[in-house]
Amino acid sequence: MTLANAASMTVQTLSGTAHARGLMQAAGADSDLRDQVAMATVARVQSLRNEGRVTDAMLDYVAAQHRFHMAHDPAGMAELAGIAQGFGLPEETLFVHLHLGTLRDLTNGAMLSGDGCSAFAAGDGPDGPFLAKNRDFGGAHLGVQRLFWHDGPDITTGGMLCLGSLGSPGAYSSGMNAAGLAIADTQIGARHHGIGWLRYMAMTRLLAACATVPDALDWLRARPHAGGGSLILADASGATAAVELGAATLAVTTGARNWRTNHFLSPQLAQDTLLHGGATIDNNSAHRLGGLTHHLSAAAPTLAQAANLLALHAHDPQGAPVCQHPDTADDTSTLSSIIFAIASRRVYFHNANPCAGNWHWFALPE
Image: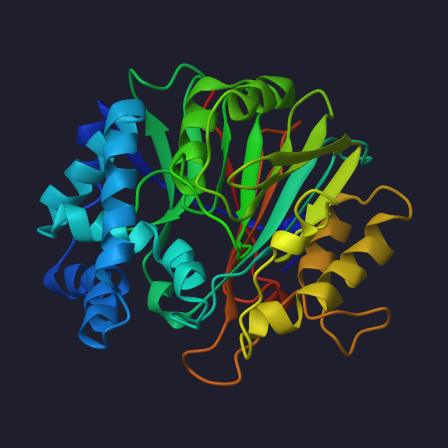
């Protein structure tokens, strides 16, 4: 199957207040799915606590982050509270789970496997502007990732389509709103973190409040950030940007095309990249970036070529391990791929490694 003959699909609709949308995640979930959500979230935190890898100092940092988000992101925290209530899980532990990438940096150790990703955007392609991402993650989120359509009073952009996971709020990977702004993130370990917006929470607010890339950049520049990771953005005008999130500074690149993997590139932040020895995503980040650079520096890609690039392997001509296959059950793998085709208001989704070619599509509501 290719993009041209992709099958249509439905997504889970979440409507109402942020708290109500969180509650609706658990609607109809049976005991097996509830157990799976618990294993993908709070069980990961508890396992690290049992191993002594979550210290009091780390929990003090998360507590400060909780106070910050309660003050500055009431809608995001209300959604998290609804999720916790719906699945019967402790809200505070779900909040710790959202910070596991940051806690990994604070310990300078491999606390968890797999959160990586490759993302790229083109505003000058023959099929119109798009954003594409491979979601690379450890196996815990296999089976709990979902596409959600959000509509509620805190969303002023006409609604937003989010790729996320049951048990996590909003755009816990990527999304596009009805105004045509698309956003995806990549994990980047950072040597420094501060008190400020966690990028998963920031992505959701950007989709809820911003219609264009310039709007989103203004929003990001006006706020403090926890640091770590990057954002790739695109909008209906063809504008794209890459934003590297430092705790002390943002590094912004704009232009017709942008892409990132799992290390900082900017002069301001390159030395702040924290690589964790033995982690697949760190070991092949430069290889994946080189492959994306080779292919995206030529002619502007079509949507079909973007799908092929998401399926690129190291053994392909001018290849790179953009489509990641695990060496072990717990290792990094590409859980899904997504292409936000902004001009056509379509989202193309592939559940599992995109080299299988089983694409589906969903049209944003008018």
